[in-house]
Image (tube, one colour):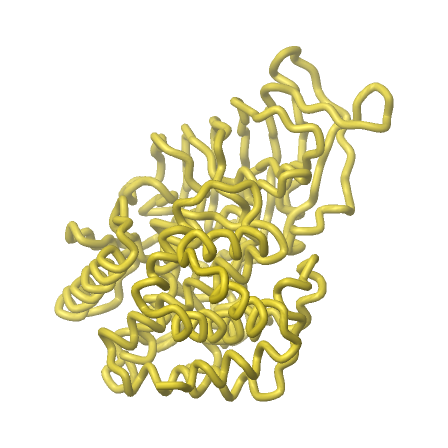
Length: 466
């Protein structure tokens, strides 16, 4: 389980972008059947930012009736597909509208999308299952449908290619109907016990969705969808989450704005188990002691609690601060992993913390990478899994050893609260420089870890120092 969860965790990453200054609004109707595996959608996007070089993402399994301009003029659009959506993970198609010259693009003020989609239903692990499940899958498992927003792109959203900003977070006002469901849940609202409901948001959210035949628990500290655990286990889990949140709030000086909502569900495959976050939603997918079930398995639950700490860390690096550029993935995942390791050290125990570090040292034994100052494209990162989950947090631990615990937390706060267009190498160095006010130390860190072909070895050596 350790190997499966740590490896498959990588599939829970979305390509993140800098936080949205302006969020579009999406309105309309969505009809779902979990027995048929279908979506039938009529959605309109308004309050669209003025963007010259854009793409509109929509899941490739969704079949368009039309895309219609609603404002400033109403007419059915001729659309083109692009093969240059370099930050997409492959689940979506990318659409755009050519201008009158045929060389540029134009973008109406308001767009209507009408489309349907039909997806396979994996309702047992003997004959009707898929080879693999992952975050961007629109997953029907016989009793529910699970889908994130950004990676699956079950609804249309706009990507600004020039600024590397993805507008999957929107205000929404949607009439949902899931004809064979007991409960409907969409990120940004509490679950509703009804097959039909209208859900609205007062702030932008990624439209992560979980609808099906399930119950839920709401104890005020957290909400758990599809609970399969005892009341005592749920209370213990709630206490753990409260403790973890308090640790982060005390260290980072930024409070969580709303309680997390956990989803417990099964994959469409036989063996996958993983977690992913689209705050406040934290999805746990797996059979038995995979997914959230691992947290209630007494013998090894401490080991798996670090994964929950990682996902809670994504509130800060992923929701509060959304990263982009070639180092965006490293910042988002690397700092979330670093936070979870620091929580492990202080709350779950130094013995477990040291075991986690030893595991990372082992993974980095033969690892080679360009130093981050020389990374100009995500394509040059050959082993993303090791780079973001092992290399990055070990580099951050080495820097902590160089500057001290107090300054490290101050740097994290500075990263989270400094406005920037791109969370790139220059941004990392500038926030560190503004935190330390010590140019000699800055140049030492750059020379050892940011601009050194032996940065892996240097970081491991420093991290091992007591």
